[in-house]
Image (tube, rainbow, N blue to C red; front, side):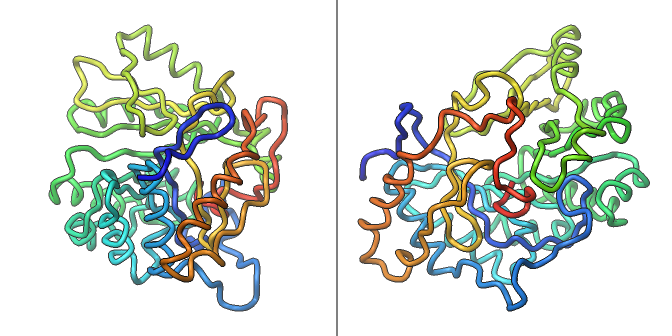
Length: 329
């Protein structure tokens, strides 16, 4: 195995977020309120299976053990099951996850699990069907909930639910969410709304800090769990009376980036060192043949020299990311 990917701040990178499309069929207010708008008139050229195999193979050789397949909505790819299988077959990859809006889960989740999917996150921004529609722009609440049930039927021991906190919309639903996970092995992850270049007004109207939820949890007997080396950024809490868990993702908290362990590849083959901030390092020309791997690894290492100590969101800097779907959230 080649030397572990590491930056100048001695952070090691065990976790790759791999976007396979920036297309999404939902119109979430905090991401794509006007629906997907292609940046180019011509049909986008997303990473092929062969390119996905080469880039994930290079990361695996350099110590990455977890790959999360993201979008847009990754299951819109007709070859999504083949993508899962391709990633799962890379030596050294022990966790293959995806984040989905859930609309295809009920029909395909068993197929995905059989292909090698080990973990799944589903975006559910409200447990009220009307609020779900208001936030996502799609009347698919019951379809998504059926997909979550299907995931348990397929053998997943836990399903993670991503909920973006929005003041005056879903921020009052904590009691309802807690009741939902009391007898279900669901890790409910509350994500603070993040400011991007196109969402300044939305952020100003609807941002709410996760600190109040954390204080409520601690006051009511919830305990912070210890992270694994390839876990994401969530602070995860458990409670002896609950089968489910609560995760909090609070990117505005001091030292949020101190434990960063993940890198991102966009659907068009660019290495992104952070969800916010830079244009990315183009890798696609080094994904055309298997014998390019040493040069590919060298370019990734060179890119890591440019990784900043943090994303500076707390200083009001949103970087150049137009919206969260553009490089996989």
